Each structure stands twice: as C-alpha cells, then as structure tokens.
Length: 146
Image (cartoon, rainbow, N blue to C red; front, side):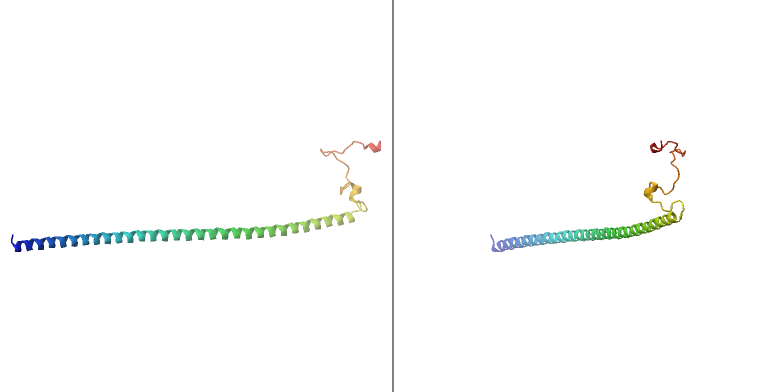
C-alpha cells in the first residue's frame, strides 16, 4: 500500500473521529441546555406555587383578623347591652320605688287605711269583702262567728 493512501485513510479516520467527538459534545451540550431550561421552567413553577400559597396564606390571615375584629366588636356590643340593661333595671327599680312611695302616701292620706298595717289587713290594701272566683260575695260564715 502506498503511504499516501495510508496517510489519507488515517486522516480520514481522524477527521471522522473528530467529527464524532464534536457531534457527541454538541449533543451533550444540547441535552445540558435542555436540562437547564427544564430546571428553570420547574423552578419558575415552584416560585409561582409559592406566590399563590403566600397569597392564600395572607388572605387567610386577613380573614382571621377580620373574624377576630368582628368577635371583639360583638364583645363591645354585648358589654354595651349589659350596661344598657343594668341602666334600665336601675330605672325600673327607681320607678317601682316611686310607685311604692305613692302607694304608701296614698295609704297615709286615705282615711279608711289610716293606722292599719298590712298585717292587720292580711296583706290587702283594700278592705273589700271576700269574693269568690266568679265575683260573687262569699256568703260562708267564718267558724269564729258561729
């Protein structure tokens, strides 16, 4: 064989080998770039999920604070109503005391009740005769009067 042919065969093999190595390097580089791009895409998806989760958490926190504020408002309203109820109870007691004072004064002024106490009248403020449920006078005689 001729050295020129052998030399061209060796050069051809080396060129083919270099081209194969170059193709392999480029292929790996494309795979690496594709993997990097895929990693970037997945990282962005995770970031988006994190943003959505953060937004959801902030919405829930805001809702919790709103509910707490409503509960505090309800407590304030309940306290106000308790105070209003106590004030009205005290007003009613004052009106009741005033009414009892008027009755006491009326008993003092009334000539039919002057000098009598409630124990003497049996707890009644009037001295009307005993009546039955149907409104008719009770005609039964007291045992002590027989």
